[in-house]
Image (cartoon, rainbow, N blue to C red; front, top):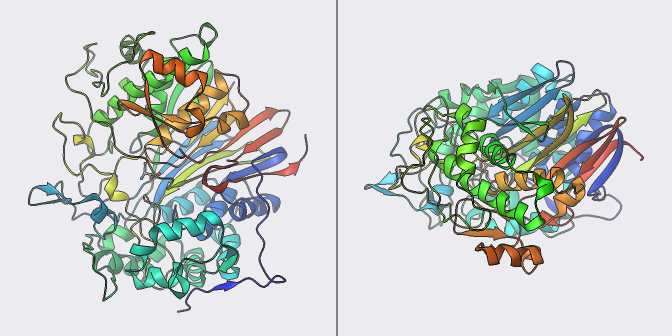
Length: 581
Ligand code: GLU
């Protein structure tokens, strides 16, 4: 098998990524991702007559090359699709599944949870990948091109190489210590023993070969050599001889990997200010938590509120819906998830009555009573600690026929498990660390304990908003549990604060997840709004950056505005098929 090469790019042969553009306006289709090469891959498919689904798969496969630490063949995600022909929103749950051998206590040793960092870099946290089946299923159901054509741009990119940028180098450097402990990972991402320099070209011929095989045989490859290699690598992680690291073996079997099935689910749906907001149902908590917060906010009229008042309500709605998320959401195949109640107007009314206009609800807030009792339960759900990393990736696409895709996918941690499948060019996920390792003292988290074949609870919230039954907006973000708050704030800023979509994406981000302090980006600290909220009793903890949005909006008369980040995560790239106002 060929190794990867990172060579100083000779000026004349250097593959140059297109420039980054945070906003593009035009017609005929649009793509927005965190990466210029991936956006270009999607655009190439649109240009040759493909639809939004084809372009989404092409862009995602390209992200597997250029953003291999955020998502790819070895991971999973959620694909939300608006079909212009049937005027319906469809979703695919391509979340990784736990091995059949996994048990409720698989992350415990001597009755204690294993250290989280050790769970991350392990075979134990590797779930059966759902991304290959997601791409295949999406193309078969709604696409117009073959897997072979959709993967073509990504194969070219992996063969030819891409130019290492600052973000890629930094993410590699952040992971260098653990990558060095796995020879296959080090060969690929630490050429010459160190993170590749900015401006050098990184090729991944092994991944090109994996994609070629996948293009030929579809998910059949998971029952063949590629599947066998995934199982071998997860169950006996190939650690360097001199590595001083506990790497627990995984439980995946050949049947787990070959038998993976993507699930077509109904989307979550709430009406907000006359718009229809569709997002991802459990196993993700994204759609239900964003939806519940919007339902609570719907009870207030934005025109009656000043900016700080609206922000206060948004933070409180976010806090309450997070309490419910932590208490009730898990894989619906394993517990009774009260989705209908959580998204009902009655429940929103019951939750909203806890909010005071001039005081801050103590956190953690208790979850609501979903039995129809109207009261609250005892005991709050502890907030998730720590800053959420910028792992995972999100993309949006639209085409000339009015189809739209909003797709979030991941390998969980930036760099996933840190374990590359030897000779195959992709990292294995560590998505099973999204399970609770044990139930908390308040009993929270039971819905999200590990079990055979179960999907861990996610926060991914790929969202599509319709106006009068036609697509108006698509949005999503990475960022673990902050995904939910990022999507919520972008929607509220765009809809209730009359910001344009680029302004809403640019705005300093907050994340209230049922914790005493709300996380805030530096640009928010010191603003008059922050001071007003602090006087009311809110406290803020500063974090460098939250999320990395990709979004688009239909501006009317066939015009589309595609939007990406300007600064966060090094900036993304938005493009339209035919530029022009
Ligand atoms: N595993 C996370 C989830 O599904 C996403 C990883 C991240 O963005 O940090 O919610």
